[in-house]
Length: 363
Image (cartoon, rainbow, N blue to C red; front, side):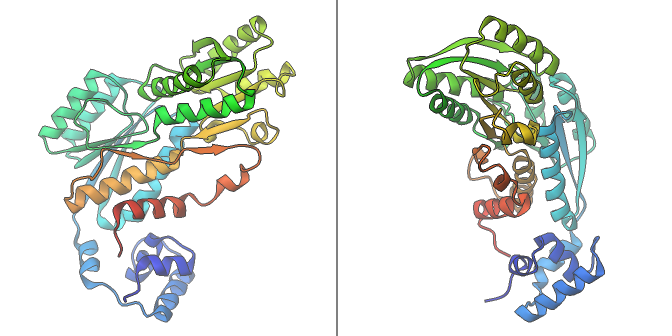
């Protein structure tokens, strides 16, 4: 059986892309690293796959667009990091990436950006979407023009996008409700803060409410407030809510503002009295997790969403194979003070193995 690039990468402790660059003398790589990889490849008996190598060397440049709303948030920076990491891995196939950064949620600007990328002759687009008809129209136009669009993190329901990659938001909300109920011992009061009327936030809240209403009759949601994803607005709302309900048992945060909320709980000496469950590890301070001001983080895995979006788009689009499913969900990771340090393991290796398993591709 022939030795694969993945096996060499594992033996060398590097990525597959690094092995490819070393064996084919292209791209940025330190000479001593390249020499070590070539030595390992020789010891393992590696024989170059001439057809695959020819494909990589003769590929035409292909431009992919990425439209990222909420780019100012720590979470979306993780999505961007995942996309950039995957791009680096496949740059030798001729991929060019054009990124459009949009602050906040702006459907009109996102739709205009789709049109601009279409005019720029991109072959595919990665889109952080939302439930808006203006985006559906642009996606439909792209489909007619032969441009694949995939959505990441937040979907565009009832559109002709190719597939969606992200967390199951409804299941994520259900998970948050379950851990909150355990913290409360099945009874108590909860305040909910959510950021926006986006697809992902709406589905999280729906999942959370469904679990509480169906299974925990002694848990009551006493307030549900929209913050507009503004940290300052959340801080003001939390101050008012805690003045009115100083004995509240739990807070569920679905949106931005974990630092501000933790500061308020600590200033009021309530961090041990009020249980806090929220989303997105990238938005949290280390100390707030380790001192258990935050009881649980339901992590959305931004890096994984970004990495998988580029990888699977490359796989399906350039192999001319139709996707075998409409939704590709990332893991729902439950993180607390006791497993936090272990959750910071290698992003790349974890997600490369995941997408390799999905694609069933072996080089």
